[in-house]
Length: 380
Ligand SMILES: *Cc1c(COP(=O)(O)O)cnc(C)c1O
Image (cartoon, rainbow, N blue to C red; front, side, top):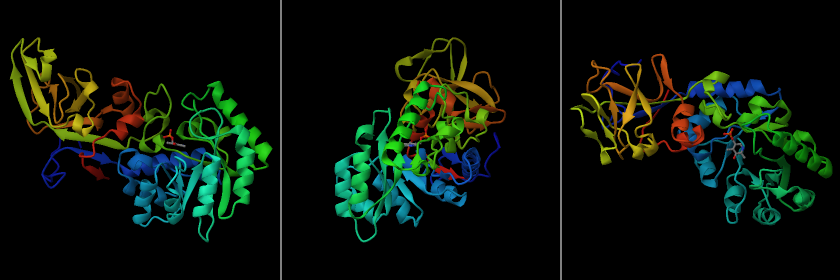
């Protein structure tokens, strides 16, 4: 409830007011949007790489499994290790492929890696124990990042089927332009994947292509299983995007703190490092205890907005490591200790991930991944 004291309960032991609320119910809702968008029988494997897109992987992983996820996708062996240590036994797909040296860990943790080159197949076979390692061959259909060239997929399939200790679960690929559903490259990549399937004799029932954007906009890319990431965290996967809310997703994060001090400035006085802003009227400038060390990007100085008492107020001057300054002149009732919302709702107003991303010329993915480690996550 905006503007209401939280019963004096500090967010952390230190009493620090800054917190990032992560709404696990909203994540479960967004998962159900993904589940409903695909046909029955299509696997849904949420992507929780990079510490659950920065929000804290374990509570999110557990909630997604409780909501019916068929397995989970991570980028790194270390990320999978955390899940296994927490007792998660469901399938874990390793998206970033198999770099040399990680094979023993992949075997020990029972991971299902994406394999993007032939030598990795031999290394994986050598590392395999009594139980075969389930793997996917990653095909480069046009993203031109990781993946086997389409011309060598047949050879890779044959090798994966011949080498001991391997179980080829299917083919995967990744779309370069899924954020623009009508982009012709989407069809081109899908057809390239179909052509490879025909060549290798593998059926469509063993293929994965779709991320969030393709999942939501192109049923023709769903195949056997889908890999939603950003949509689960409440942001739109499309570009340009208004907000996740506009496509039925629920916001997941709310980042808030409280005003630390208020300064009265006379006309002509400057604010913060470099005095990048000089006030043009008698002003009340409030100090907010969040800075770039918390992931409040420095590009938001003199550009971003925050919510105070349900109103938008501008960030003025530079963003410091531990603080920002905001202009609350138009809100005379505002006092020290007043809640400040950096992301998410305050009353009717809301700062979406998409809006913050646009202020700094990036995408919601990066806003989430850069939320500072030192901001305490509170799970609702
Ligand atoms: C990160 C990732 C995804 C998820 O993408 P979103 O756009 O967040 O849905 C899917 N597949 C692969 C291979 C990825 O690396």
